[in-house]
Image 1 (cartoon, rainbow, N blue to C red):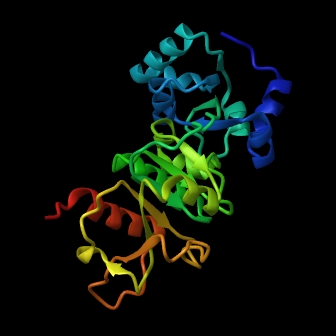
Image 2 (image 1 turned 180 degrees about the horizontal axis):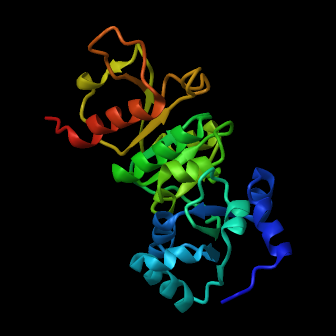
Length: 258
């Protein structure tokens, strides 16, 4: 068991801020579920800080044994310390520091989700979770999108960060790397090809979900993309970005086309 010094606590609290997460390439995860996912996927966990009440949970005891077998520093701390380290209003009793994983140098060949200037952390986390659920090969965020390791994004993604690669690219770079290998689909509220009428795709797709207020960026060139619309069956004006993505991905991945 290690002793957590006050100076160490200060360094961990710095990770509440985006600039220090970027500087140190570290982020925080909280809760048994996220710790379990991180260890299962061999994420580089730098330290674990927990309240002793969790020792009553067999699953947590198993996680501690895994951590100790990997020589991950483990600290038993007081409720006051947990609260000071946590980014949550109601801390879950365990916090871990994790290294950010560099994105691979090349994009995977499968279908991808692009989050284009998504600004709500809950939406981005849910979109990452959806990409994992639907078996996509990765997620790309464009400049202007909320940070992928923002604590609220981490919570909403529920561990999916550890299961698929996350890329940060601007639109010209995305186009350069995908326009020959992928069918680029832009989700638009109206005016696109209705999804039920979309022809069978011969290539993996790149689905672009745009900003919550402004929609997809006008930089996407019309000659290389296909705007698609999820037609409303009522007078409802629009859907939340993540809800729309879930519905579109359901059509693209589940529906068999002749």
